[in-house]
Each structure stands twice: as structure tokens, then as C-alpha cells.
Length: 176
Image (cartoon, rainbow, N blue to C red; front, side, top):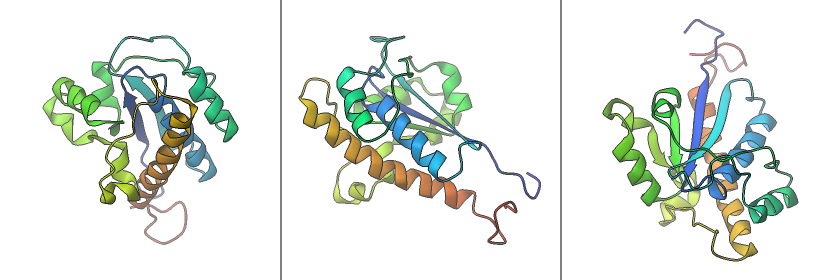
């Protein structure tokens, strides 16, 4: 990479059906990235490990919770993780251990270092909170809880990515 060049970073959020947690994470992270001025250097997407809802918009309850906090999710559509995702994305972050296990089984060994849990970027992770719970079978409060967790972990993830892009001189534009 030449001086002044910023490395593009690709982030994929993954849950089971790609209609609750992962599109919520995509929307939250997209807004945080935009607010930080990194929307041209960080590509964000979400997917599911299962094909239950391909082409469907996020769960209506997830959309309503997101809208109340100013996040846009209505244009998102569910898709399933594909083999090419393991090659394209730099971060492939599952919402829970069950989906992480599926990703580990499908991931080519040379890309396994890209896999992780979203909550590993949260301050709550050090307190033993490793998973974003699936709100699908619960009430509206579950979707609010997911948003709280995702907002916190997304801030930590963005902090991690920004540290990797940290300018050598302290001025934007001259990078390691």
C-alpha cells in the first residue's frame, strides 16, 4: 500500500435467517461508519447461515425498533452466506456460537482468522456476554435489547478498524 492510500475493509454480519440480528448490526454499523467518515473505505453487508428467508426484508419488529433509533433497514434483503464471502470479507462476525460453528465448518482454513463473534468487540464481552440473543420468538423488548448490544459492539468494532487505519503522522491521509 502506498502512502496516503487507505485499505478497504469489508465487514459481514451473520445470524441464522438474516432478518433480525444481522441486518440490525448492518444498519447500526453502517450509520456509525458514515458518522465517522469511513463510508468510502468500509463495505458492510449481512447474511444468514440458513436459507429460510432469502429475499425477505428484516422482521417487522426489528425494522420498527431500528426506525425508533434512526436506523434504516427497510431496503435490506435477506441472503445466505456463500463461499465467496469467505474470500471477500475481512471480518465475518456471527451473532452467536451456533452460527459461528456453522461458519467454521464452511470456511476454507486459510480464511478462518476472519471469523469471530460480534460481541468480542463489546466491553460486555469481558463480562462474559458473548452472544447477541435471537429476539425472533420474543416480544418487542428483545429487539430493543439486541439494538443496545449491537450499538455497543459496533462502536468497539469501528474503534478496532480505525486503529488499524491510524495515520502515521496524526493527520488524515498519510497511513501506514
